Length: 191
Image (tube, rainbow, N blue to C red; front, side, top):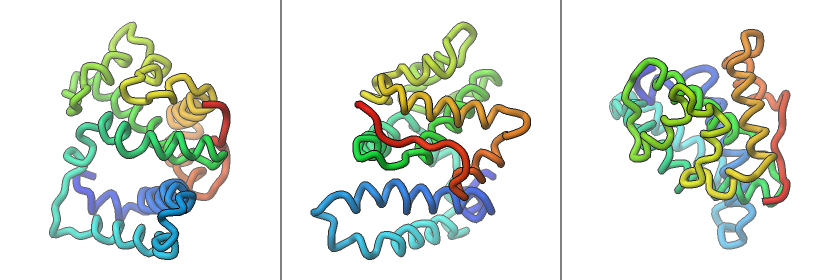
C-alpha cells in the first residue's frame, strides 16, 4: 500500500483502525463528562472518518500520514494511553501501534532509508548498531513521557513487538488477535 485509501480498505487494517477508534480512543471521550452530548455519535463518527479515508480522489499517501510519528504520538496518542491505563481500560491497540511503528523504524534504519520525523535522529538511534533496540526506543521520554517508566505499558509493547517478529505468530496473526480480542491485554497499573 502507498495510499491511505488502500490501507483503510485493507481487510485487516480497517477493522484494526475501527476497533482502536471505538474501543480505545472513544473510551477516552466517553470518560469525559463534558463530552456527554457527543458520546452517542462516536461510532458513527469513527465510520465517517474511515469512509473519508477510503476516498480514492483524496490521494493521501501513507508516507505523509506516517511522517512525524513521534509528534503524533506525543500530541494525540500519549494522553489517551495514560488515561486508559489510569482507568484500567485496554490500550492494547496503542501498544500494537507502537510495536508496529518500532518494527517500521528498525527496518528503515537497517535498510538505510531516511526516517521522516522531526525527531528522526532520536527515534532512529535505538535501531542503529548497538543502539539498544526496543528497550532504548521505549526509554525516549520526549516521545513516551511517563510511559517510558510504566512497566505494564513497556511489557505490552514488548509482547506485541515479539509477536509481530515471531515466525509463527507474525504480523497478521497479531493484528487478528487484536481485532477479535484474543491474546494479550494491557490495562491499568501505576503511572
